[in-house]
Image (cartoon, rainbow, N blue to C red; front, side, top):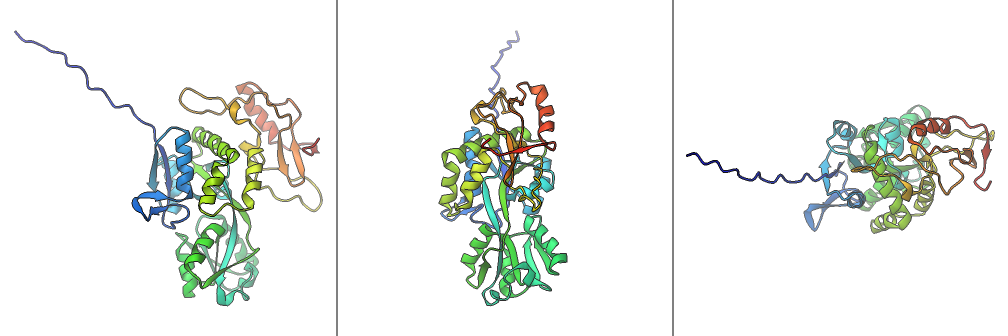
Length: 349
């Protein structure tokens, strides 16, 4: 007689969703670098920001190494979900990527040799000279514009370390990059100096594939809460990066105001704000949740009666009680919101 015994099936492990993020650690501190005390671990403010978000989303973080110039391609392939890597909001917008609310404001810094500090004070002084920077950054776009405006020669690099070493060696005559990078290199290279008052302002954001809006919205919720309760400030103070620019950035971001609008023109006409999904002021506790993921919420009625986009000293304004309370009409409302307004008012009205 053949005896057949049914054995219980082996339990399958439950899949754990990871918070996958990527960066290029080539430049090192203060962004991402191996911990000097334990090389198997990573440290840096981008590591802390990613860990903060992963913890709030209850997902273990997983880091992926990627060359800086390949970050967008890796995101589009789905190699990882988001990149925290000193990435600029203006560049993300220009390249059509999805991006989070800004979490740090920086200034472009022009670095020269100490011997040339009186000779090269601004980009205009560098006519006929070579100026280095990191490729695919706002600084590179500034130098490209300066090529025709000031007759300087932009030199792009694949990392943010070699521009400064070449500057020391006399191969180029200046470097234009974020003050965060410049400060790090000045500590390493006493023969260099950053000129004051020469840089434009920009912001760091997390960058995602254009279709990954669910994860973007989840990250935004965490970043906004961390701005409000001081956790982001604590991270940047840990690395000596919190300065007088950050409270203003946090106030604008928490209010839903765009952070990089041009100044009001001399003729007094209001400047139309570019399309910004975060321009709508939404209470964090009123965001809706789906079963597994945070989804874009059908925005309910708010305590706030003014919805606005800042434009210098003027404000684009929607009529009171004009926001939809149902999901189907939200897209139509956004189209109205981003169309030119016919009136302006101040926040106090």
